[in-house]
Length: 134
Image 1: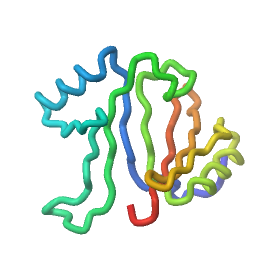
Image 2: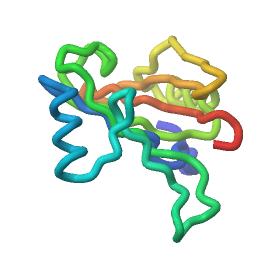
Image 3: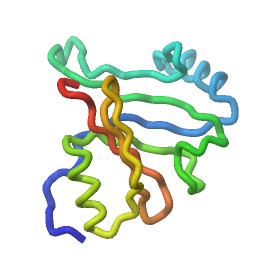
Image 4: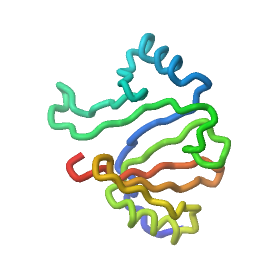
């Protein structure tokens, strides 16, 4: 394990879970809890508010199909996305620590960079470096 104790994540970028009927389940969350479900099927909770007028960023929430493989090969019904400042540096540190890190990294100009690590119990964790300014 690395001796570095400095923060590696800066916050939660999103919470994702599986549902048998994602569209109906999203509608339930929207109706009963007021989750602002968008046309793409999930919600983006913006950090900017009257109490935090300079808040930058969002936390995503979305329900995936029960048979999605986006959460990796494990049986986990959820996946948490953590925000990071240096995705490639963190992935290298995790590899050095002996963690199970996927080789694949996705880079998208609009959404940022994504990488994945699997925890010791088989849960896939998504790491997200947002684009500059987000």
